[in-house]
Every structure is written in structure tokens, then in C-alpha cells.
Image (cartoon, rainbow, N blue to C red; front, side):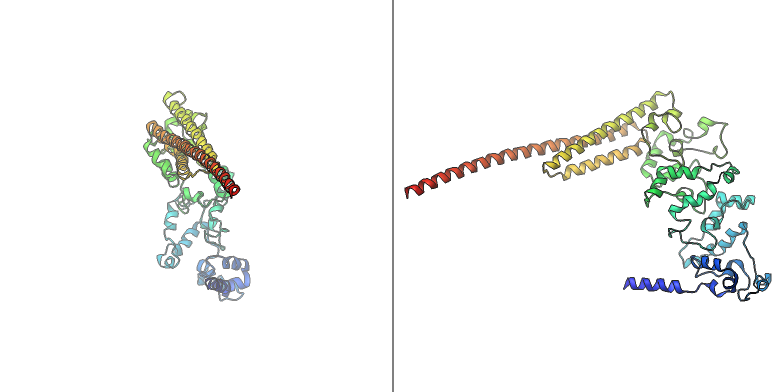
Length: 419
């Protein structure tokens, strides 16, 4: 029944007439625009005149249909597009039926794109139609939409991958390519993981503003809460210790002199790779030695973290090998398997905890994981001992039963002979 209703609703939508289809605009001249608008989310809500004005009843009369007296506006200038879209999308009454927010225009005005457009008259920056298209506007949930999560790198890359355009603003044009190669880009584009971040998760959609140096940690914490909490407790949360000015005072590139680098100082901004031990004892930007080349304490911490993780990992691997061997013996291992999973969580959570740089807490964390592996080993040894004893007892009982069966058989044979 539900499937039938859905198919019927789809059929009605497909056969419903767009407001544009009854006008002379699309029947006489603008057929391509009619097709695009018909496939758009605006197809059943807007007619040509809603955006362009004019007289749609003037059949094949360009002067009449384009009459200024009829309110004809023609092609909308790039500067005016956001305000035109805002006539509907900033109207609570019109948007209520669609359950859409009405603050996109206000947010856009506050963004770097909006500020560049309104305050500096620069219409080369992104406007609504650059991201959403002009007539064929699709819902963001539609995988074909330019604003769909997996398509955002390509959409943003039309501008941010253009070397000439970005060069005019002193911005890098390689950020999109860096993102594609990053752990985030691979998760989004190659592995198609639903939880993988895309451009708007960090920069916002309509309020596209690069994360301020004092908010990067907060933005990253949306997806990495445990890491964010540990970072906030650590010494690097101090703005003065993780600021660009700490190393580059008086020699900062434009836009980098107003706060912390935070997470990006070690992990980068767009080309984020899977972190490894190279961050602790490696060389170059992002490693501890980049900022602490001669200090003994950071290197001691790095060594402690690396060696501690290796001990825990070796202990966990041995526990897994013991569990695999015990399974082959037919032992019941639910408790030990649960303990092993807890140890794995300890390994995973070690990375976030390391951001606090609290050797005492990290040491307790490592000791807890190693202790669980030791408990697993002891429990398995105990179960093996019990299994061995049961097998010995079973063998002894079997021998006794076999001997008794032999004696009974001999007695029965003697009785038969006497009878």
C-alpha cells in the first residue's frame, strides 16, 4: 500500500505542470531554461517572472514580454543575486512550509564571500548560483546536486582550485587537491563514509569563513571530542604557545597574525594525514622537534609515548595470539574477549589522550591496558589448567570404565561356561 502511494505521488509530481510551462517565456524562446527549471526544486514553486519579471502572456512578442512597465529585469547581475534569492529564502512565511532556515542571506553577508561582495563590490566571489546553479537547483540531499557532500570539493574547487583567481587574493589554489589526498578526502571520496567531513563541515555553507586561529580546535572537536578535551587540558591550549607569532613574530603572511594555529600547527589544515610516530620524533613542520629542537622535556615525553604505545601494542598482540590459541582448544572466552576489546579501546584512545601531554595520566592509561592483557593471560592459563585437569580426569575415568567393562565381560564369560 505504501509503495503504491509513493509511486502515485511520484507520478503526479512528474506530470504536474511547472508555473514556467504555461508562460510564453519557455514555450517560445527559453526551452532549455524550462527543462532546467522543471528538474529543479523550484520547478513547482516559481515561474520565470518571479525572478526576471516581464509579461508571460505576450505570445512571441519580445518587446511586450520584456516590457519594463511589466517589471522585466532580465538577467540578474551577480551583485543582486543574493538579494533576489533572499526575497524568498529570508521570508519566514514562505519558508515555513518547506521547513527551511531563513538566515542564509544574513549569514552570507557576514561571510568572507559576502563581505567581499557587499563591502568591496567584488562580484568575482562566490554567490548563490555558483554553488546551487541558476535554474536547475537540486536539494542538497540529491547526490547530483553540486552542494551534495561528496560534490562539495569539486564545487568549491571551481574557484579555490583556480590559480589565477586565488592568486588575486593571495590564497593557495592547492587546498582542494590537498583535501582530496588527505585522510578526510579519502574517507569522503574513496571510502564514501557518511561521517567523513566535507568543506562545509569546517567552513560553513553560506557563512563561508576560514576558521579563525582561535577556533580551529573547537571546529576539530566537533568530530574529535575526546581529542579536543585532552588538548584543552594540555599546555598547547595556551594561545601564546601555539600561536603563529611564537615563531614568526613580525614576519607573518596575510591573515595569519590573529591567533592560534592549534590543531593545524601539527596536523595541517587541508592535507591532514593519518598521524604516526613521526609527529613525535620526526623532523619538519608538524613534528615536536620543529618547535622544540633542543629541549629535553618534549623529547622525553615523545619517547615515553612511543615506547609506551609499543609495549601496549605488543602486549595486546600477545593477548590476541593467546586468545586465538585458546579458541582452538574449545574454551569459553567471552570474558577474555570482552577484556581484549577494552584493551583495543585503550590503544585507540591513547592518541587523543596524548594531546594533554600528562605523563601521569598517560602512564596510568598504559598500565591499565597492559594489566588487562596480563589478566587475560592469567585467566587463559587458569582455564588451560582446568581443561588439562579435566582431560586427565576424563582419561582416568575412561580407563577405569574400560577396565570395569573388561572385568564384567570376563565374569559374564565365566558364568556362561558354568551354565
